[in-house]
Length: 333
Ligand SMILES: Nc1ncnc2c1ncn2[C@@H]1O[C@H](COP(=O)(O)OP(=O)(O)O)[C@@H](O)[C@H]1O
Ligand SMILES: [Mg+2]
Image (cartoon, rainbow, N blue to C red):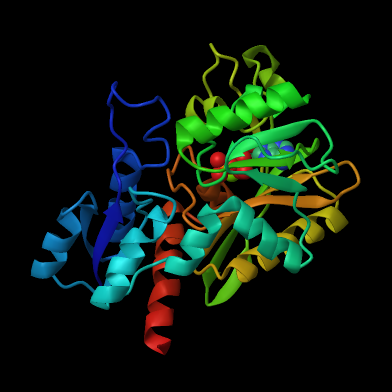
């Protein structure tokens, strides 16, 4: 197949906030996907979707399929930018469509869908101005997050708050710095889990990945914060989470967690691939935090490939599976 890989490149720019490019992909990830596709016999060109390169590329080239990992640039629907343009140009692409990408990027709206589907998700409230009355049913500790970000942008240990003063301070800080609503959720103590779903012929739930932060105490971080993700493995900072795949769960909990991930994938309308982040509390309630329809695909660092390896797949098999799933959809349409 002739394939275009669409991406946003992670850059170094000291004039931007430290987490500005966190969602974007590194040259290593882009290079790894290109070589995986080539290994499987495809021809591939990688296209940075920075405006207006996408338009100029597709006005001169035709492809069989776009392998899309672009997170987009502008605003709270940014992950839909590239799929919307490809839909308009009638070019097939891998992964979820415009609607699911926009929905999943909005954590609060996704949680409303989960609630309607009886999928457990932490109780929450959205703050748009920062002077709203706090819902008296919410129990501290609470966590404050930007409503429309990923890669734990804007989330560090100070985002977990234990009183109203700290809560409103953090809410206003998020609204001001991230120019969007602040999502306030009950903080769920428990196991950090993430579940990968891969559709290739049949829908496959990969072995669950458990991330254990108990060796990270010296860092001051104790969950999957921005610092934890950005500097994962840095011994000097004490950011050394351990990964267990499959997760250390009994059969019953495993089935429960896989079931909520699958139902979340379907409720949001994801296609080909997704990764659902879950906190399992001490009563074995699997609280869904969010779903990522564009999970990171760094072959060494990202969570999704780890789960694929645990299922016995090589990196190039994972990339090929995403491509084949999208090709099958194209064939059926
Ligand atoms: N309600 C919560 N309870 C406990 N931990 C949470 C909660 N919300 C977020 N976290 C922690 O913060 C991390 C990032 O939050 P998440 O909602 O997944 O945002 P992102 O899209 O930035 O990954 C989670 O993986 C988890 O470690
Ligand atoms: Mg997450």
